[in-house]
Amino acid sequence: MCLLLSCCSHQHFGFVNGQLIGSPGKKCELYSCGFYFAFKRLKTFRLICSTEGLEQLEAQTNFTKRELQVLYRGFKNECPSGVVNEETFKQIYAQFFPHGDASMYAHYLFNAFDTAQNGSVKFEDFVMALSILLRGTVHEKLRWTFNLYDINKDGCINKEEMMDIVKAIYDMMGKYTYPVLKEDAPRQHVEVFFQKMDKNKDGVVTLDEFIESCQEVRTKL
Image (cartoon, rainbow, N blue to C red; front, top):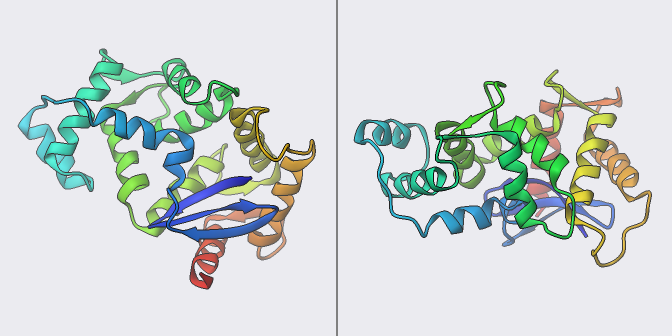
């Protein structure tokens, strides 16, 4: 089974059988986490959005005006109020992963989208993050992924934070996985993560260590 780390260009980084790897040609993290499905679903909508707002977002993101219109109409269809709260976010994720419990992963992901930390995500927040995850540079994607894992936002990832994220991913995937996961699989993956990424062995992974480790994997491919 593959535990996702990040999405870099066309590279898919993750843990497979305890090894940190990158596999070219696979769908990125968005596919596994539901973003890809949501993005495809939003493409079915036609949209309306102010010209001024579209032009501003077009300048700030990697989406075309037409793509922004599609995303906006889909966002408004799902969230008529113009904002999405955490509970709605969890409900959407529950649809993507009906055989697991996606609530905790959705919680962490929502916090990563909620850059203002005010308990709500506006369309601008949503599309800025989506732009990075789908079309950002390798560095931008890694920085965003690091921010997701850095739960307490202190600038580094400790083992407790990584364990929380890993457990949330396993819970989201549910018990119907093949091969069947061992009970201590999350702990093993966290240990491998820190062996690979904690360069100075101080018990935490900094942004620089995270980016360096992921780029080392990418360079070897």
